[in-house]
Image: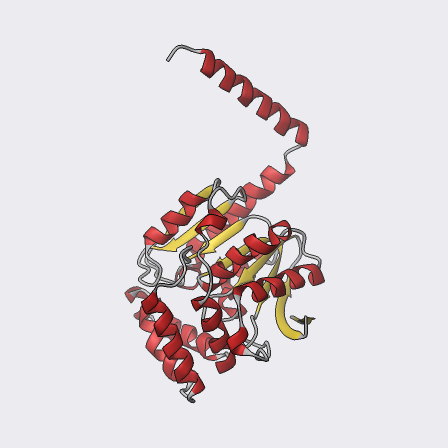
Length: 295
């Protein structure tokens, strides 16, 4: 674990293992610890890095929560990538972390590699969602306890099978509570004012794995289908018996999907340039032959 300071903001970072880097961006209202099952699985052969966004986990609160934006957070993450010397890391991001990834695509696409987008959506908030986020901010500013708000959210985040495992539900609740009210307020501000991301994703060339929970009520499967169809090189994996937190509810299936994606990209990156050129030439020749053939 380490702490870095970017533009005056101190940020707690999990930094474990060695090898090709994988950077994890957490969902709301969680922190880097939500990825512990993935850190433990990948750190033997990858450098795994998880960020506690300001006011979450062990990171201090932001100075001005109501000024938070996805753009400023993207600049923060880019600064961490530079500070830690991460060379085009694979980004694994969930829900709110996905919104942050979309801003990285807009502002810092040169710093990031392949993407794993988990239970997230490309559209901006509708009016009802915007108002609900504002109500939460007002409740927190008025002194409402994080624990109370967290307890009201658990049922919607987990599948019934997960809720029937008390130890899992308690673990998720504990993760949600290990944050500061200022962090919640900042995240709600950044989320409710984020721009639509469909234009940023349309035609994007980076290899992209979209992971969805089969029973997700927060981010329906249609949202994941949309993202995988917008990008040029998209793949959709559905994790059975899980809802909005598939990496916690079914970590074995989740980790298998991520490992397969990482291995595929590592193999592609290791392919000699001349082999790639030869393959492209063969493909071009096949295309020419096909265009010359009668319909």
